[in-house]
Image (tube, rainbow, N blue to C red; front, top):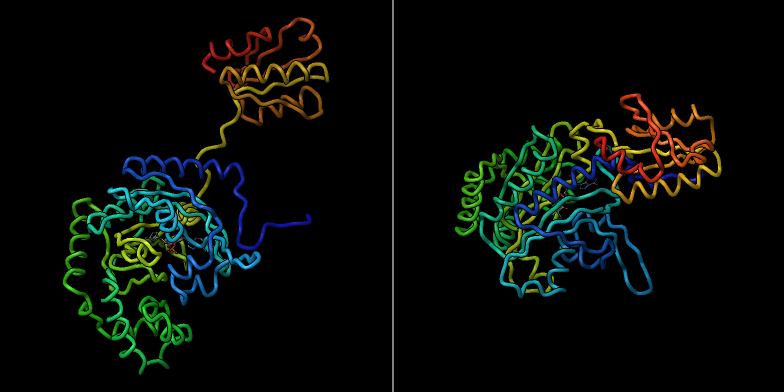
Length: 417
Ligand code: HAM
């Protein structure tokens, strides 16, 4: 073996990709029911799009972007899709439509993290973004859509934590007061938090180090930094969630690692995942459209990590890869010509059909046919060529019959494919 897939990337083989298709189909159906339409943006974006949207000092921008320099431009393999979708929304002047734009997306994201269980360098998001409304019920719908999808994927036992960061003004105020209170305690925090104090103070609130956690808990941080409108908005979100019957836990220490969030943030975790326990996350980003040069538009969205969905499901394949219905077995070169033609004719009639290309005795070929799981096996040898009819074996019933080459498709159909 000369090559392996790059560290932190994974081949999705047919048995597994079949399950991915099921998950994706369930997601597409759920999105369509809620009025979300698919958007596909490039995997390649300008790197500045993310430094501007996520924040220059965030972990993703500082450490995790796969950069590609070409002449004077610097591109990046997108680490997430929210910023790219806002970029597309602006570039295609979708803000001029007087509706809420509701997009969904399914695709790979890239982050140069240290790979571990549940943490890859190429992973996949199923996500949604609704741009064009500030209404708190939209946040509730987004949380409900995210948790509802997980249910449709067969997951239960996850926890949805919810918080509000307040508007930009509130965030600033909170950041300053945190700095004031936490700086004198600097030495008591873990190394990561000591550096976060300087540039990413909110991340101290959700540090998992037990000593950091204890200090934060002892500070009794209230909600005093929130303005009246943000308090009312958060109440509205919770009212919407109650109307939709979505259970969440309010967690005042939940912050997110991306700067664009304002007001509502949420994260869905599952105990089966271990250290990387987030199945998905999202929230409001009311200033991002303006930040990227557009008009003022409220927006809210989420993304689920598909690999983590499978990890949490403990993904034993739920169903085998569907086999071709018919497997044609030619014996010899002349028979192969007829087999090629016959298989194509059967497919044209809407019956899936595979063809045996390998050498071997009839017995070996039949064993192979059986292994594929095909219900029907059609054998063509010299005798059959001479007669203009092959032998159709019903692998389920163990019976067989002679069938003229041009009667194969109708015979299979007549017997319930
Ligand atoms: P995020 O929390 O960075 O949010 O990613 C969402 C989910 O992607 C995580 O909860 C996790 O399940 C999965 N994920 C993240 N990094 C990795 C990784 N290295 N390997 C495997 N899975 C991973 C966002 O990306 C936001 N754009 C979500 C959002 C949409 N907010 C508003 N709209």
